[in-house]
Image (tube, rainbow, N blue to C red):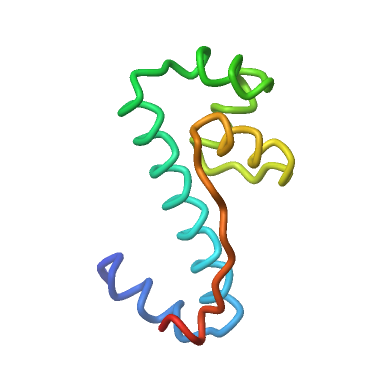
Length: 93
């Protein structure tokens, strides 16, 4: 029986799979970071949702890595006093 790591390494050789995998990985990392920042500020999901003018369910989806619309994402980021910037991956790698 192959290990998960071996299986994943094989799948990652496929360009299309790798692109989707990296997208999902990025979503999860952002979600974890937002949840960590919310907790550091001592806010519950309900508290932050009210502050951001979104529902607690929308916030929960963001923190669980579910894709959301950009407007909702920005509301949550602004409520956490976060600034969003865009970087060229090729220049930062």
